[in-house]
Image (cartoon, rainbow, N blue to C red; front, top):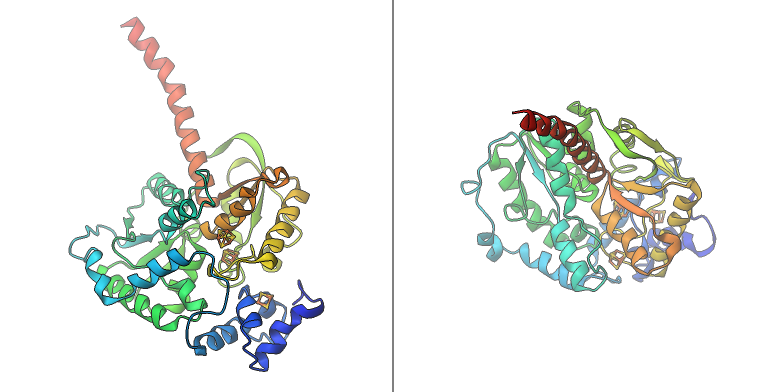
Length: 363
Ligand code: SF4
Ligand code: SF4
Ligand code: SF4
């Protein structure tokens, strides 16, 4: 409300409190938690919207931009799909820590399929990047991929498809409990929030990758290849909904040569990227992204870092329109850190190889 307190925008709240589910206000809300954050009475508006949506029978009355992807994920929820997934016995689980990648590979495919991405966006990179960092820390982590677990159900839950969400949740919960892990890590802000707040996982601690890295003392001696100024976008699922603001910033601050500058709206006041739960992607959503891009430009940063592959996808989408003004590099923090690790490794190799060569020559 504090951010969008003009004119008809307040209709979203007014109409929904009046139970006027005419489709538009109820599905326009991004459940970005800005309302709750601004409300002196801490009214949990997101939960209100969630409950109201779950009471509406039938498909969500909202623009759903990726219908093929949504259909694939919904089909996964059915029991008939169970045998497409590896059983606990079939997967070698050799660690008490599991990593869940989210639907990044599905999103990559969908973006190519829908002609949004012509090859420059690679959300799946967050998975490889996370394992580069775990390796650097000497931490054994088991990959609990999408051939083992189903979609977490975040989008289905917030689209009001409660039945689909409950099926996905029930399958994944049983699988996770049988896996024997005690920590579940994910780099996707939406998956992280869903497992942490919307599942009941007895004896399993759910952590965002940035939290896992900082709590386990990830402090490699990293130096950026070139001095770089970055700004950071707080995903609403990670920031306002889960209170993780400092961990990604601390990780960035630990890299020598990285200067962090803040956007006008950051931390608790950060603006959403404009799309949540892969729905209601419309002109309003686009204008939020444009406003955010303008804030990035105002900082003078070379790059924008965030902590959610889905945020990356929506920002990249604006870039695909081709306006040079918005040709700003956007990276997930995990990918950014892994790049620094790889760069410092190859530098170390370069430093070693001339001495090896000279030893070989003298021999
Ligand atoms: S989109 Fe955010 S600010 Fe707007 S009504 Fe929903 S929670 Fe409130
Ligand atoms: S995509 Fe990112 S900013 Fe947008 S709703 Fe999801 S977490 Fe929030
Ligand atoms: S902004 Fe996001 S939801 Fe909308 S078309 Fe682009 S990638 Fe899809």
